[in-house]
Length: 427
Ligand SMILES: Cc1ncc(COP(=O)(O)O)c(C=O)c1O
Image 1 (tube, helix red, strand yellow):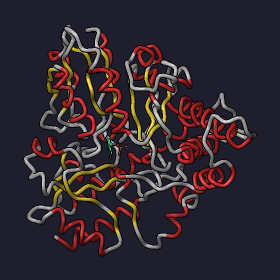
Image 2 (cartoon, protein in one colour):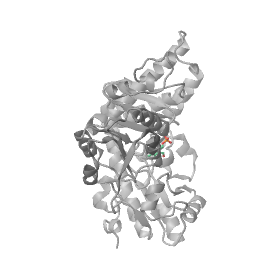
Image 3 (cartoon, helix red, strand yellow):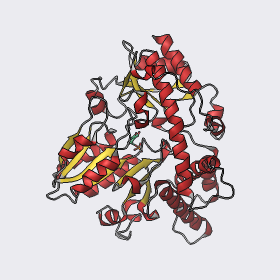
Image 4 (cartoon, helix red, strand yellow):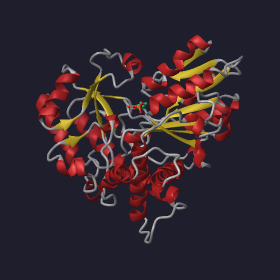
């Protein structure tokens, strides 16, 4: 018997976590009929409050910011409020440390190009073979700026171990770029420990928190990292991205901006117009999470800006706990169906992963598995998951890759069992 199966069935439902009630706040879920959203790593659904915020923005102040008239001032106010909300969500020390933009990839590119211009004797960048290609190729592109690259590699368990990072660091290290959680395997990296090691040699650490974002509490001060990027559309907001960076580091970075834009964050990181209505949606997504925290903590009265970090933290801790039950059950069902799971597959290590599972069914092409699931009205994904180097490490052909099921807090154990039925029939 394999490891997760040996752990026995997870408790079918976590009575403390109101997944069913929360599902009702997502119109896409209530209108989807029997369809199961198990492709959340590629983007999550949005609650009604987010839809309302986007609509309200488009109806009431769909104009350019920076004008002297009421509607334009309302745009400035809305962006400023969203900046404070996201800063609270991340426990940033200043709202100005948050920049809004199109997506995570363009922010990684922006920061990497700026860092590329600051390379001197410290010209080594450490990248990993676990990361999404967005946090690898962007840094490798600095080769033309004389950057040298060092690889922090996963071990046989599919995880990055900080013990393997230590010997790679030196006085030549400029920056370590690594993920907080693998978008393919769901494994969590101990980035706090990595940050301590990196700072010990006077280097910086850039964290890709895109995949972790919807799964647990983020706290940039506790992580003690230097830069961190997220995609709002993975955290129950519309398509947009945001970047956090230490204020003094952002202030020093040479970024592209027009001459009339002051050389200070966040303006120097936000060249051009971004999608204001989606930023309003991100603000509403933080409020949605805060409202879960307030409900779970039995808080009454109106939410305050001061309590926003504490409220979202309560929500994300509850989400994390609930999602561990989902991970246990999905792992058990996959193993029961004979699937080969890549990465963490033992119940004892469930807290080191999120409910994102990469697997293959022996002798069956990933595409065939995903098509069978689609016929059963279940959305999962096959391929290299934008982590082709990881697929190579797993000895999987990049063009076929693996199957990925990625769950979030609105998914349920009953949905996992429906996927199990499809896999069992296939076998
Ligand atoms: C871990 C990770 N990093 C980066 C990205 C790229 O994000 P974006 O689409 O916002 O550029 C993704 C997208 O799936 C991801 O999962």
